[in-house]
Amino acid sequence: MYISTLFLCVNAMNTVLAVFERERNMFYRHKQSLMYDSKAIIRSFTLAEMPFILLAGMIFTVCFYFLMGFAIEAYKFFLFYFFATFAIGNFTYLGQMLVSLFRDSQTAQGE
Image 1: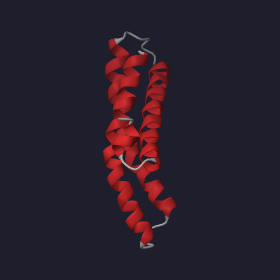
Image 2: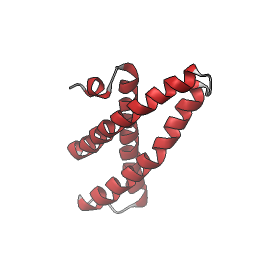
Image 3: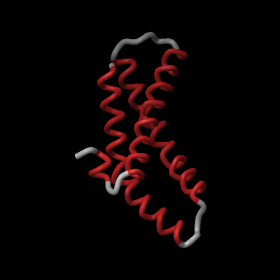
Image 4: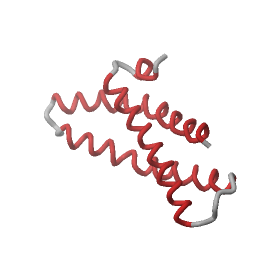
């Protein structure tokens, strides 16, 4: 159970690296021309990732939860969904942070 969740989370982090690298470069151009405030850009990056995180968490939970034969109680299902979505979100935003800190996505990935 741990490895399957970790695999999904690391996959989410690796997926966001290349995309966020392009968005970061766009951010620097817009910041230099004083078009957008940095808080507005950060909020938009966060809100843009939310549907993907929620959808990936739901697909993973629906497939994995019933496949493993866990208890069929709504609150346990949604608790598992919450933790899976929270983990995916943490790794996604960790990937964004790493790309923000390092010069490119290959360095951020640790290759």
